[in-house]
Length: 368
Image 1 (cartoon, helix red, strand yellow):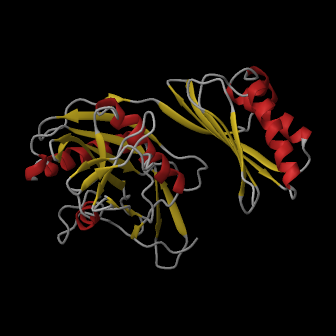
Image 2: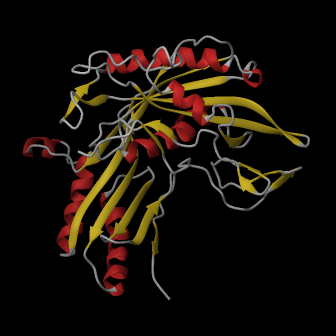
Image 3: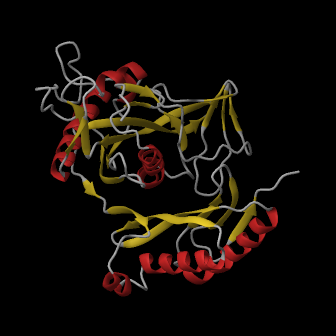
């Protein structure tokens, strides 16, 4: 395994917002992007998108990119929308926590860094874990005359579910599992300190602050982690927590014949039937996999990936048409699903169904 650096600035914004340049509203040097249904408008200043002051700062203890994507998307779509409707609020990347501030907070607590939210290392042969992996700030504003006024802040705290370390430099890596109880305790302890520190900032003394806790998936996971609790406070103290029960999984699952038979009508069974039909119909298929998310045991959506070995455009066209028909017949109804058809080198087509719709759409990537 390659040697890891402590800090990394990830070159991605990754926030699930629409940047369509339509319906802009002007406010002196401030404009807002347009939005599609259910998405936030975002802030543009001086003709440029307003990026976060701590853009992508994280401890590179867990470099699973699925975690980064699901963390940022979930913070916006699962957490923020509970309190700040896209109809009434405008999204702004975090402007109150700088990269240097988050760098200190994500570090270990030492005499030189008393603000560290992670514990001191302890013994090198059996170090204390780095629990807090990432922190993200999102600001929600409203237009007031010729200015934008801050109405609330959402903070996401990502907590590792495992910790990798070396007992000696250039030695092998060891993995220490972090229990769910530790994840919850460390996340809630960090949240209390974060809220108290935010209230010390003049601009944040009287706005609602929402804090959400996210359990990181392991390094080798093929799906991201999940948010498991959130709280809202109007003071410098954290109140009661609301639990969330999300589960992410990769399909197909490795199951026994008996389990497969018992689940034949469930999500896993539906996907297995879809996969079998696709692979039997076209011989040049390298793999069919999916990410599925459920909430309280109910499917919320799926991301399907089909890897092909097609070489002609006519094969891609025919295959995409077949996928639309197979998806209608075999995949679960009533939830958003997207199907990415790709080769080893590029995306060939996308098939999708939006939330609340029964219509499947397809787009084939061609060339002039």
